[in-house]
Each structure stands twice: as C-alpha cells, then as structure tokens.
Length: 452
Image 1: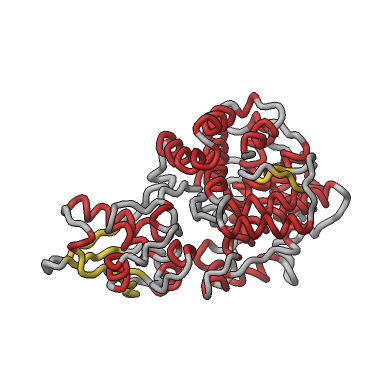
Image 2: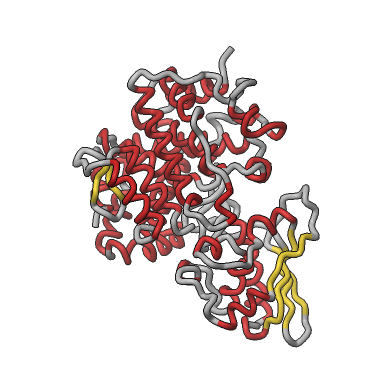
C-alpha cells in the first residue's frame, strides 16, 4: 500500500515548473521577495548574530557554499539555511499560515540548496511551490494550528521540516523514491516547542532555521543513499501523526486536492511587525480610530474579547524583550493608539519607556469570554475617557489571502526593509531579477545580490 509520504513524493517529484499555473508562479516570486526582505531586516538582530557566530565556530567560510543574507559570507548549505531561516524570522515580518511561518523555512532551504548546486530560476520556483504545499498540508493534516500548537509543538518547526525536505528534494531533482527518503529522514528528527514563551528565549526565531537545516541535510543525505521510513507519517509506533498530533490528526487532508490546490495560495503576507494573532485586533483599533476620530490620549481602557487561547498566545503584558512585545496584542494596541502604526520601529526599540504607552498597556487586557471551541478573531472594545464604549471585530485581517497585500504594498514593504541594508540600487536589482526569475540560469545571480 502506498504511504502518505510516497504519494506526496510521487506527485511533486514528477511536477515540472511548466505545470505550475501562472498564479502559483506569481505567488512563488512574491514569497521569495517577501522572505528575503524579512531576512535582510533581521541581519542586525541578536538572533542572527548568535546564529552566525555559532555556525562560524563550526564551519569555515566556503566559496562554494551558500550565501548568508546581508553578510557576504558563504557557509555549507545546512549551516547557511539555519542562519538565514533564523534571520528571516528574527523581526517577525515573515509570512504566516501554511505551517505557521512557511517562508522562513522554505525560502532559506531553497536558496541554500540552489546556491550550492547552481540551480536555475525555474527549479527554484518549482521547489518553493512544493515546499509551501507540503508544509501547509502537514499542518492541516495535524488537525490545524490551534490543536497542534496547543499541544506545545511549534508547527513552523515540526510541519515546516517536511516542507523544507520537499523543497530541497525538488531543488536536487530527487526521484520519487529518494524524495520519500528525504521526507522520512527529516521526519525522524523534527522538533520545536513553545517553551520560549516563558522567558522570550531566542529559540522561537531559531525554529525556522533549524527546520530549514533539517530539510537541506535530509535531501542531501537521501541523494547520498541514506534511507528514511516511508511510513514516517502514519506508523502507529513513532509515526508523526500518532506521536505529535494524537486524536486531532486528519491524515487524509494530505492528499485532498493534491495537484489541484497549492497551499502557497493560502499563505498571507504580514503588514505588521508582530504575531499574526495580533493583526485583526490592530485592524479593529485602526478602524475605530479612523471612524470615530479619537487617538490614544482619549482612551481610558481597551478590552480584548477572546478566549483563553487568545490570552495565552498574545495576552502578555509583561514586556521585557522585543519578542515579548511582538507576541503581545496589548502592547501592539498601545503603540498603535499612539501613532497609528504597527511597523518595526514600534517594536524595536521598545516603547515601554514612554509613560503614556506603558499606562495604556497597563489598562489593556484580554477578557476570555468567547467560545473556546470557535477559532475567531478577538473583538476590540475601546472605553474612552468621556465614557463612550466602542467595539469592532475584524474577521479577516489585512494580509490574509482573502484581504491580500497588493503587489504595490508588498513592494513598499520590501523597500522599507531592504534599502536600509543594501541601498536603493541593490533593492531594484533584486526586484528586477526576481521578476524575471524564469530567465535566471544560475540562482547565484540572486544570492550574489544579497551580499553587503
């Protein structure tokens, strides 16, 4: 009997670039530009410095290796994937849904593998499409975001490892059998847990990088002859679904509309520099401010009507690190109230030293009064100093595929993140090269543009 990983491998190993619909090709280019921009914004972060320093202790610079974005140093592919994946997630500006943060896993994987083998642009786009699709299918089959992450697993790392392995396997052109081995190898050492929420540890940013390294190494090991379990997903003893997902698993979702629907089209692009769980609340507050004409000085209190999961995920009011702020809806609402923005400068450096921001943060809290069995965006209630109470709920926040970031908005976001690192001329080169990626014969044309 064909296993789930064999079925996925058979499909994607045999799907050429030419079979990708135009909308998928466009989506791969958008994903590449958005993730590179998020990564370049993260180059100066403490997480990137730590990851780079650690890998530099283990590996010598390698002119035949893969480029570290924004650094001009090449390391072996696995090490580069780890650093770049960490970098892409370091500023919380990378995309969302799919496996959680699919771009920060799949794009560094593809870039690293394509860099070392000199793959062409068409191969890169096909690999991005494969990685996004399998990563998204994995989380759906795990039961969805809330059940899987609610068990303590960080789906970006767990489900993302399979997407990374698929992406790297596609870059290497592995046949179906070796493609299956790559998924099996990656699946035997997936991990990533939410313990970082306790103290804001850097491991949250590391998880996409570790998943990317996992995928790169798994694909090269498979190409070298290493075998992995074909039943990695469904095996009753040690399979991914029984071990990591329990009763919430829905394995059949892996194959639903395979070849007809690609999960890259279900992935969104972030307009705000914080956890996606905070975005609908930010949109709701902005709507209220614009509709009723008040600002932060007029707000007495903000109530976030959600569930206990809302409180656990984004309810934190104890802000000591940038990660704390980016995982806090109360903080995001407080800074948005005073300035009308939730871009990167609102989170780094922290604005808690501003008395008015800190006071509103103290007066903002989650009220867990919504049905815990219904995954719904929170409703924002603003109590003004004049006694008025105003409420609004945004069901589909900006950036969702149903309320997408336009090409022009993506370009503006990418410019704001890339130009401070590489300059306007290099930014335009990156945009132009990605726009004509079908014509790129050696992907080093792209990665070479990422060096300072």
